[in-house]
Amino acid sequence: MINFNVIENKISSVQKYLKILERYKEYSREEIEKDIDIRGAVERYLYLAIQSTIAIAEAVISFKNLRKPTTMAESFIILSEEGIIDREFAEKLIKMVGFRNIIAHDYEELNYDIVYDILHQRLKDIEKFIEIIKEKI
Image 1 (tube, rainbow, N blue to C red):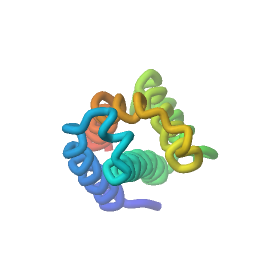
Image 2: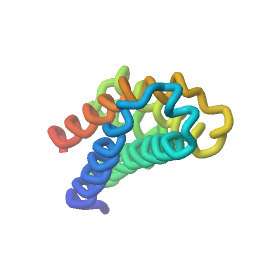
Image 3: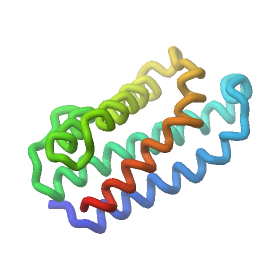
């Protein structure tokens, strides 16, 4: 069973990645796509932030001794079923899992409009998730 310190450490990791990503918000969508170094950094830190968010969900599930998910996305469904997050918010996080999968497996098909949107608009969903977890655990 996972203890609360594990969850806190995972939250700390996500916060570190979000802080790094904050630096890349100054770049335009085109700069991110065209500069291989910026593009690689943004993709990697988005991947790490999302992967670590999934790890928090899985750690909370273990900590609360809930049923085990069979997919990464199901972790957020379980948290929704248990009333930790609402279903609409779970759907937003599930979309991030899908984006994480694209980064991990189909990176050549990455849509930089989506990358830019996540960087500027959707990272707040990860921040909100962290706040909910801190509040409810």
